[in-house]
Length: 353
Ligand code: KG4
Ligand code: ZN
Image (cartoon, rainbow, N blue to C red; front, side, top):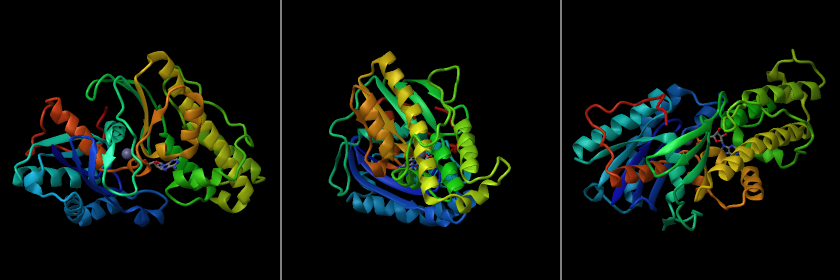
């Protein structure tokens, strides 16, 4: 079964073709990240305009690389939400139009849930991919860490799951992006902080752990403020010093120490909660997915603290892509889940898991 998928929840315009939910035939991602870098974050209007410009060539490229055509495609899967409304609209309307004109069944997919399903891609003839050797098994414990979400989820099967905990404020990727901005590191912040941290001392600055009632919930906004206060102090100023002045006032060594200390605390929190959930629920597989799953320190700490190997998507499939949307679309089809109506499917920016 061949699924063609479309993903436009944020600033990446993506299309992919996946066979039988595990074989990656193509994965095309056109990012407008360079257009947003000057603003230090994604500008929704620019993202939507850029989706509109490239969506058709991106889909055609996905079909071409997969060496297939519309006659052979069995279904279309599209990201319904969550995400930016203007961005989602372009993907959803394109998928609806294609489902009607090409007469294909349409599946609406939750983007956050789909991140986990990137780990089911275990085969490809495309070069440059390092895929998991074997598919995860259920029950599956997933830590989903991205720019918009931080969740611990226990999947009984692809469609039945329990949300164990989630962030009560900022997502961990968002905290990475904000710390990067404070330190004047280039956007996107996650990889920049990760790189700067390599040269710093993770124990240089003691940062607080958030105390919350549900042991599986997360909070990163206090950590972000603690990083700001520590940076102001290190630069020789008090808490009234504007964060916009910090990149100039801090030395490279101080920035590296701040990045390393922040990363150490954030990663420790993620791994501690994942470990506790693993011990309580004893799942068959553990997955870490989403943009922050590309983080090398997170991978290192998880392997040190968990007694089971963790399954990760290829680095290129950690950040936003359409291949993960196709996998979840395939499972929905296989499990006989409800089709989306191509005449009425609406993008849902606040779609919950
Ligand atoms: O999953 P994703 O591409 O988009 C969302 O659905 O949000 O995740 C993007 C997030 C950004 O916050 C980015 O800074 C972060 O993932 N990220 C990283 C790394 N690579 C990307 N965070 C930490 N370390 C990385 N290496
Ligand atoms: Zn994402």
